[in-house]
Length: 254
Image (tube, rainbow, N blue to C red; front, side):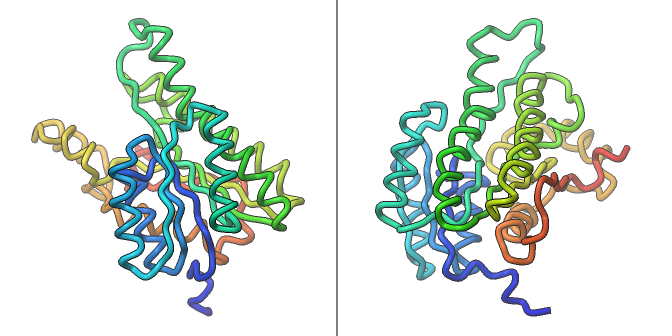
């Protein structure tokens, strides 16, 4: 097989939630395989640092401050991205928040905020970028979901509901936009090494209890998650649409 199927040379990607964690790692991973990157997040100083790291890899980068729960700002970001970069070949809807707690005790504000960012934000970004991709003749949209969107997880009812809805949105968009040569897929990661999870697993007992439920017996490396995103964004995935790739070390098969 031609390894160039897995390259992103000449592609321009818009990644939300890219000021740190998985979003930032994805921006750098995409740059490593040839993509120019537009990074968006609420944290402009952190975004600029990520953009500078992309440039140090020899790729172009644009940092745009945005809260994806603001539909008007989403439209502005997409318009500015196209005006300055010329196109958007790939959209990675990574922005998300984890509202935790029992459903019976969540406030309306907490519930609505989870949906506003994790679901509505992804929809607004996809809708705006989808219009661009239709004019361009195609593109790839990847929604970062979660295993919590495929199975119920204690204290993650709001988060899981938003991610389950995001998975269904993925399939619905894939069905509507296939005729425009736009593929839409989702990645549902389990537990992986990230600054957020490192804090959560500072409790050794919690970490060991989690590892017991993972058949592979470990957390995923960040690079193992970004590699799947590279695949879904590449020509190697041209015939894949409407699918959810679960990367959880076997956690959901138990």
